[in-house]
Image 1 (cartoon, rainbow, N blue to C red):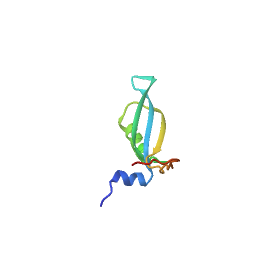
Image 2 (tube, one colour):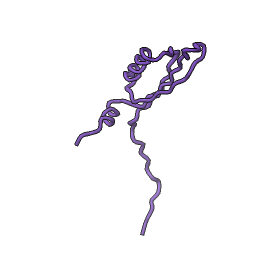
Image 3 (cartoon, helix red, strand yellow):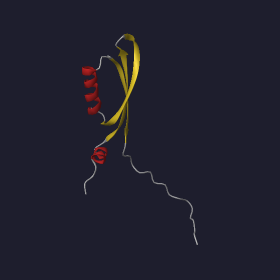
Image 4 (cartoon, helix red, strand yellow):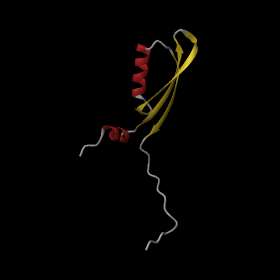
Amino acid sequence: MKTSSDFEKRLLGYGLLTAEILYRIPDHPKLLQSFLWQTEDLAPKFPELNRFLKFWEREVEGRIHSVRVAHQKLVTPVDFRFADGEIVMH
């Protein structure tokens, strides 16, 4: 049985990354525009984000002002809860 590559990535520590990129509008450099981007990435080095930002610098005219990052691991420990009561069914 073969596991999916997404599951393997999650076990390796990949999690959901959301990046808010503020960039300068080329025709109006004093104005900032916001762009949101999401992918699965590996903290703390963020190889996918770095690859995307290099692409942006190379291909997009809008110069990046700042990048804000949020990252959440997708696999977390299971939360166990025990019941205090008992239900009897006939």
